[in-house]
Amino acid sequence: MLAPIHAFLHCETPDAWVAEARKPEHLPALLVDHANCEMKAAMSAHSLVRRYCLPKEKRKLLPNLDFYKSLDALPEKGEVLGKQALIGDNRRVFDELDKNDLLVKMVRLIQEELHHFEQVLEIMAARGIEYSTLSASGYARGLLQHVRTHEPAAIVDRLIIGAYIEARSCERFARLAPYLDEELSRFYVSLLRSEARHYQDYLTLAADYSGQNIDERVAFFGAREAELIQATDEELRFHSGVPVGHGSRGNTAAMKGFTASR
Image 1 (cartoon, helix red, strand yellow):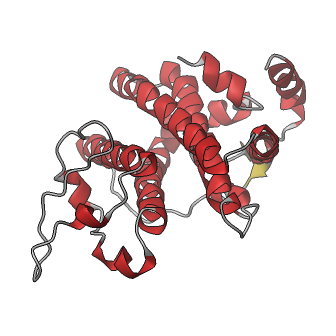
Image 2 (cartoon, helix red, strand yellow):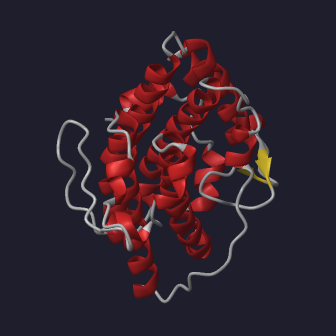
């Protein structure tokens, strides 16, 4: 399962990040950040549905994230259930949506990310960890600043970024799992399959929307993502770089070896 992830990413998570992340005193912050990441992933997918599956004048019809929790298992061939009638005109919200692959994959992703979000909250509650405000790392922002401004280049870039975020999440779940307690280790391992599928879905959609070879753009974002992962960071977060004080020199050889094996 992890072989395609390792082949896709341009570097592995630095050992220095793992060494810090596995420390018990950092667990509360990591769980809060993990919950935030799951919600942000759902919101990003929701934004793609809103922007690219609805005409501009119909975007107001798209409900909030809570709506996705009430959807049944998705049927095949792009037909998406809309169980809540719109007040006033009795139209079902998804009657207005184009039945395309982006919609189907993103709605499924939203459902899964919201479920993961709730699972993290349950784990936190059982351990007496408060879901509090926490600053985000600059990881996603560092990738999004390179998104092109014209279409379809913009959606292609956003989908490629989505693929890297999901792939990195999968890789970090796998790196951390052996060092966590049994409950958390089992939970993180259980997330690997869905995160791996999400990265593949994003990458497939990027190629479909581009209509041409995207290898060069994928490589571009892969290099940027690796730079962010190898850079030093002030605070430890789930997608942060190397914690300040550990430096990245010790990971240079590992990065070269990892890249050479791709």
